[in-house]
Length: 176
Image 1: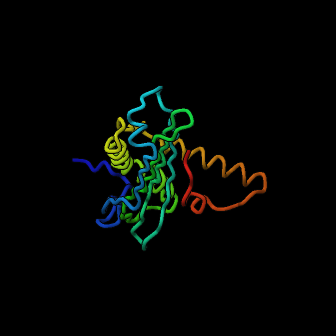
Image 2 (image 1 turned 135 degrees about the vertical axis):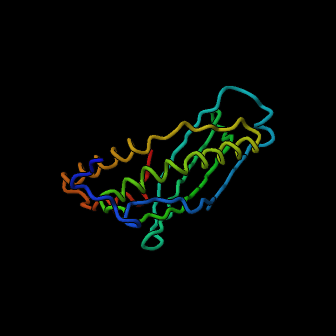
Image 3 (image 1 turned 60 degrees about the horizontal axis):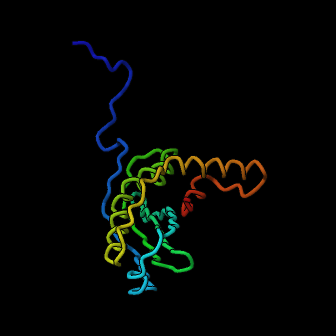
């Protein structure tokens, strides 16, 4: 049997890039229902929702990173606030042997994509427990948002704005 690898060496055990989700946590959860119980009984038209999401990354040590999603959701009916919820949901990731060029996309796209469904479920549960239909957020395209943020950063650098490296700008980047 012929060897088809011809010049490509297999990665040595322990040197291949790897990413592991070590744990997940809720760091902060706040639910305000200022009009209860009256707002729940009043009925009326469909509420207007304002939802935002931000991604933050904190390096814990050489291999461990905490990636946190901050979700804010507010529902209004005309001038009345129905509810306001803030959730900071995090994942702890172990990254080994990841090339530097791949760190930022991995931390700002893939890690948030892994923990988002769990954060979305917490948000749905808390709004339902507050007496409202569960708030089901649409999936977020973290890759598209990351590309938009890189384009904004490049434009700022061309205009002579803050010339921060992409790695620094990615930490704590606000995603809309």
